[in-house]
Image (cartoon, rainbow, N blue to C red; front, top):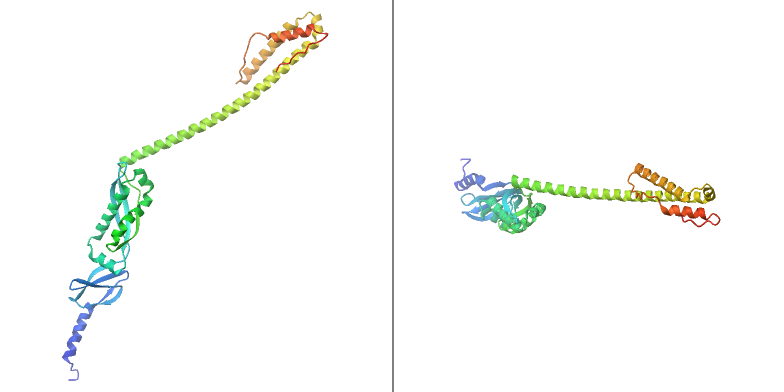
Length: 309
C-alpha cells in the first residue's frame, strides 16, 4: 500500500492533534493565570501564548486581573463630641504583579472585596474616633492618607496594593443638618451685627468729633465778634465822653442798653444757627457800666480800658 503508515507513529500523532487545543491557551493583556498540577499550584502564566500539560495533569486554576478597581465603603462613625455621622470612602486598589502577591491574591481569600472593605471600615473608626465633628469636616481631605497608613500593610499581605483612598465630607441626618445650619446662620448674624455696631460707632464718633470741631470754631468766631462789638462800645464811649457829659447822659445806663442789644442779638443768632449754647445771665453787665463811667469822669486823662475777649 502506497499510504501504509506505521501505527506506532500514527497513534501519538492523533493523540497530539486531539490534545493540542487543551495544551495551548492565551492570556489577555494585564492578566495572569495560575497553573495547578493535580490541585497544587506550580507556576503562573503571563500575558500571551502559553502551553501546559493536558488535563488532568495541569489545569488553569485561577484568573488574576491587574487592572485597578474601586471599592466603595460607607461607615457610620461616632465623633468625639458624640455626634453620629456617615463617612464614605472610595478605595482604588490592584493586585501587585509579583509571584508571591499573585499567589496570595489567588489562594488566600475568596471574597476579597468584602475583606478589604472591612479593613477600611476598621481604620475609619480608628482614625475618626478621637476627632470632633468640626475636625472631621475640616480634615476630611487628609483622612484618606491616615486610613491608607493603617491598611496598606494588611492589603499587601493579601497581594493587593492601594493606589489611592479618597474620603468625602461626613454626612449627618437632616435634623442635625438643620441644627448646624441654624447655628451657622446665628453666628453669621452675630458677626454681621458686630460689624454693623462697630461701623455705627466709628461713624458716630466721627460725626461727634466733626460737630465738636465745628462748634469750637463757631464759638471762637462768635467770641471774637462779640469782643469786637464790646471794644467798639468802649471806644464809642471814650471818644464821646465830653459830649455825653455835656448832654447829661449817664454813660453807665447807655452801656447797659448797648450790652442788652448785644445780648438779644446773640440770642437771635443762636436761634437761627442751632446747636449753640447761650448762657443768658439776664442782668446787664456791671463791669461795662463801670468802665464807661470811668471813661467819662477821666476825660482829661483817660484810663486804660481792658478789652473783652
